[in-house]
Length: 327
Image (tube, rainbow, N blue to C red; front, side, top):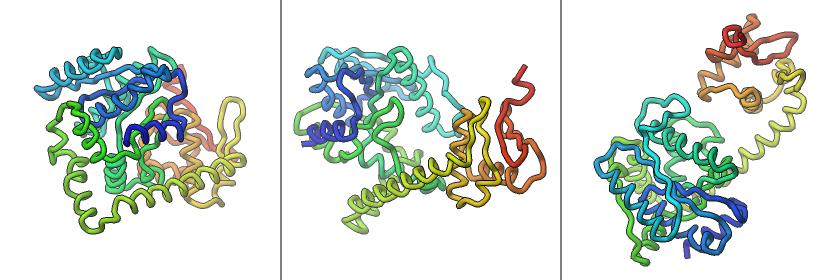
């Protein structure tokens, strides 16, 4: 029974503490409709407060009908409904140029606003096991490192994903068995999107090559998660010696990290940048530029953003706002 497995997954990962407010991203498609019905019993039992939030990109002629479907589904079960439209939001950061990425950033802005207006609320997203596999290959094709290949986590900040161990087929069978209606987004079939090409071409081909594909994929991603957790543990241990907090600055001991493994160097620099809250896109070129400055340049300052620069002094480095943004 997939619903009981979802409840078990929630408990196992402590995704939704009792009395939480859970804002479900309800698109009207089969995945989010299934998650709606999986969370509904917990709402009725008083373990959580469920809110349905629908974001309309306004890109399809059918989108008003989808929004109305979601509204009626929520109202039929006495669930608060919160609509949002792309024209009222701006992406939190610059898109990479793809329509798919822009859509994701706009949805993120909408959901983040809901958390702001309801402090402590959780955003429940309906990503399932098949989405996890698609994400792995998208990131593989884009040259992601180990962390990226570990896939989506059950919880990241305010975002929870209770369906990561439920397959798409299980979702569709459940909805059909219980005669639960949902809407179909035709863009999910379009080969214009990389995720769709992977979904409809690559994954079926891999499953046809070896019937053990899904099981071995899960095992591979589990092992990658274990390796990533170990690297993070080693990074935390090394950071105690390599990153020194003093007078509101985090000093990176460049002399010390010269001798650590390149993988740890990369993680330490990433941790250091995050400590300052510097906005950046973690590309290979970006980290190569920083590495070159820290270890192979005689210069004492290097701009990494229009507002931020790295400064080297006495075998240490720190980050500061540029003079134009300190006035």
